[in-house]
Length: 229
Image (cartoon, rainbow, N blue to C red; front, side):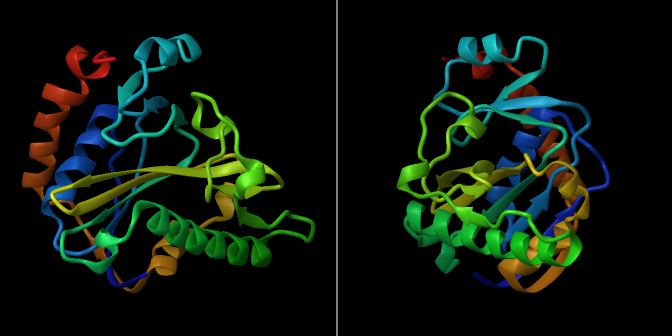
């Protein structure tokens, strides 16, 4: 999918507003496609840009909420593998039609999952596959409503994601969950290798982290942002 890919594996865990802000700032600053694996400081629910906060709060009354910059449904985080992919302007992948990109990305993730699970767990684990037309459901919660080309295992959705395009750059935010104890067998580095030819470890510069912290305060932690709908 990429000739080169930077991988950010953070040791520090962040809350929801900081996670969202960091993705947005990285989208504006990365020079190469960059995959970031989240580390959560506490349970959190993110919800889509177009969703109504009252509906989310009714479903998750006691968990901190934050509105994403991307679309999609509500997602509970903390025990999932959450990741984002930032593709800068000028990379051929950033110009792919949204549906084409989504299918290509999820097909590669499915290949990684099937290969990893085949070598670490006994026979009988259902194959991970792309959702088709016959699998589609609607609803406000991301993982109860498979969309086309989400990932399913045994008929249950395990991966969904949402996209945002800004100034010809592309951001994807995804959550892998519902695999139970199998999740501990998955090496996130393998995910990066399924997407890029040459994978290089990268770090978040202090200036980027400071900019994200400021954005988290003024936007993603604000009532105006989270209750705009």
